[in-house]
Image 1 (cartoon, rainbow, N blue to C red):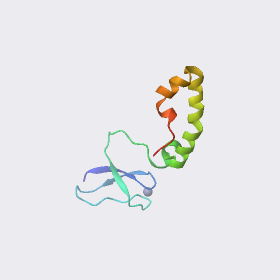
Image 2 (cartoon, rainbow, N blue to C red; image 1 turned 120 degrees about the horizontal axis):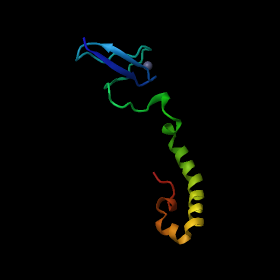
Image 3 (tube, helix red, strand yellow; image 1 turned 180 degrees about the horizontal axis):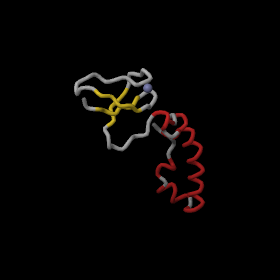
Image 4 (cartoon, helix red, strand yellow; image 1 turned 45 degrees about the vertical axis):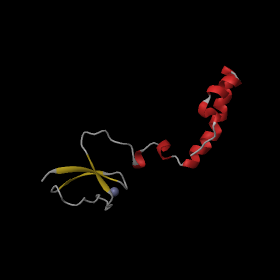
Amino acid sequence: MPRYDYECDTCGKRFEASHGYDAPLPTCPDGHTAVHRIITGAPRLLRGPAAPVSYRASKEELRRKWAEETPKLRKKMVDKLGEEAVSKFGGTLNATYDE
Ligand SMILES: [Zn+2]
């Protein structure tokens, strides 16, 4: 039997399972059924509880952060380059957060 590596989508636990090529997906040792196979050797994506908080930031948080940070950043640029340059070349600094 070939052995495969799996990762649980629910709790992030990794485990191995031995089964035939066309067998159904195994379940996580904790009983979760949402699992996916890991292709050994491929770079591992950050996901689940181990992912940094920024990856899980909600749209609300992003919007708030944008509204907070952008005017400050824009002011810095205006101090440095002048209002005209920022208006012309500021790009997203002149925009409001928009989905
Ligand atoms: Zn699990």
